[in-house]
Image (cartoon, rainbow, N blue to C red; front, side, top):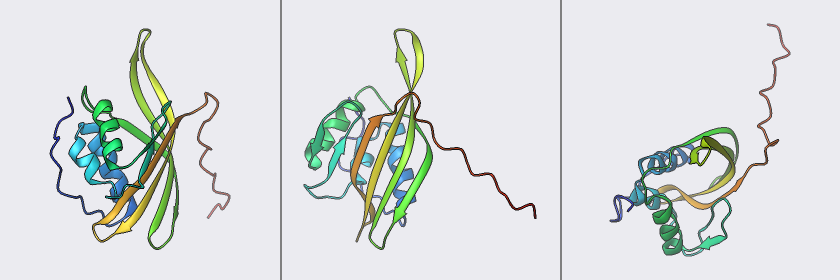
Length: 150
């Protein structure tokens, strides 16, 4: 059963990056209360987990994370972050790397995720999370090589 079923005090994130870091830290800790404290308190919030359907509303999203975190934390490494931000909305697209145990041993699941953050009176909060399994050949673009020598 997921830990911390009681509502957690809202995390005040001053930036979308702080909200994102807190989200992945809460997932790694298996802390359902902290995960949900980072979501906008609005029935229009939505979430799509890899291989799953659309989940709409705070209660439904909470129930989906309760199942996911039922056996403990979900450590996720993130990379290849691409940001787009306006005054009160930010969209982050990134690659999530998740270690999973299978019948053949431990392997890595690579997931493409889009997180949408809104600026609220309680700081930046998650309004949407959409994740889908990455294709085997879907690798992050290499970092650009500097062309200036000085």
